[in-house]
Amino acid sequence: MKYLSLLLLLAASSAFAQPAPKPYGPLPTQGQLNWQETGMYCLIHWGPDTYTDKEWGYGDEDPKLVNPSNFDAMQIVGAAKAGGFKGIIVVAKHHDGFCLWPTKTTEHNISKSPYKNGKGDILREYREACDKMGMKMGVYCSPWDRNSALYGKPEYVTEVYRKQLKELYTNYGPLFITWHDGANGGDGYYGGAREVRKIERSTYYGWDETWGIARKLQPNAVIFGDVGPDIRWVGNERGQAGETSWATYTPHAPDAGKKPGNGYVKDYEGTEGHRDGEFWMPAECDVALRPGWFYHKRQDDSVKTPQKLLSLYYQSVGRGAALDLGLSPDRTGQLNTNDVQSLKQFGDVLRRTFALNLAKGATLTASNTRGNNKTKYGAASLLVDSRYTYWATDDKVKTPELVLDMHQPKTFNIIRLRENIKLGQRVEEVAVDAWQDGKWEEIAKATSIGGNRLIRLQNDVSASKVRLRITKSPVCIALSDFGLYKEAKLNDVAFLIDNSKPPKF
Ligand code: FUL
Image 1 (cartoon, helix red, strand yellow):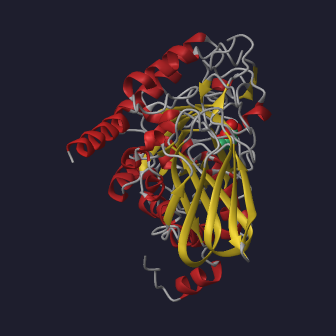
Image 2 (tube, rainbow, N blue to C red):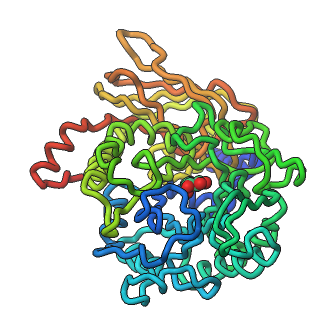
């Protein structure tokens, strides 16, 4: 008896002594982890272009044009929330230079419009709506400014652009992202000069210093730019990350060497990222709900359908990237009902689909558990709703297997896998099998697991046993999630909406 307790004690202490797996490659910052959990947000374009029916204003638009009859931030933010989005990015200034907040840096702002007799502040209204609805907020302030007479001179950067960012970072509460687009320089009004002004994209804005302002004033915000430094552009505006998409990336700015910088970049490499990338810099997929980023009446019938949004969701969020969906309020200052309806149906399908993980309650048998310590590293963590509890294997075990016995047949068509990315992106390839007619049949394969990987099967699979095989990983695994889901049918959702009965979960 004495020996038995001693043995048990030894076994337990050696198991607990087993250190956590060593992190692999570049790791996310806290801001990047928050961003990964945010997953989906909307980018809201509204301003002079809404009234001139353009996509890029020249910079000479009369502020009086911006005169919404019924601007309603709650309607817009509420529609985004109903779509399952967790935050919004407000385009506070687009290339035309018009500022939606009463900035001290230029006269070309909302206080010169008739809106609220010059006392309006669109940013403040969005902030209040976000707070009321539990939504996150971010800002987009275009570096290119076709209105400013100073654009092209160093003073534009020091006296206008950076001061605008300071105002936005100081007066509108905590921001989760600051978004810096890559369209830079060209013809414009420029205070009446009406000429072409070219700048050196990678050096003109002094990005290191400019981003330093965000780091100081909004330490939890991530910075999005063509090539980071925190979040990279996916390289297209179709909302699609690569089938293989690494969170790691090495930007190619020739002047800045390998340092992240908003300079020249091989955009197309943003789609897949780099397996051996030097930085943790996952992709954001931006795509508009309509053909354009701004509202155009003629596009009222071209709003992306919930089905289309769903496939974009799997091609962005499902590949470890984020979905940044463009919304375009109209001239009244609200979203068109077609947009609202599509968002709502999309959100309902997502909520209903992911409400139930069919793998819950399964008996799990793993081929290996780190230090045999099931409490700390056991596969049961995969079914716990946390992105950071995880199943880990011994250092030398890089291709383990896991069998899930669900005890009765379950029908699914979505498989979800996530790694504990606090330990880096480790797993390169996996395969999933289903027990069919007395044998294992491969039903799916996937690459680059990372923070989120959704596999949408062509057909439903019914099985009582499922097997996960990690087929390629340079190091031992640290997997945090395994889920099986059955996608809700859009028709069911539409039916519920028609009857004004929100689905119950
Ligand atoms: C681009 C801009 O040129 C477009 O107008 C839009 O704002 C898009 C989201 O970013 O760089």
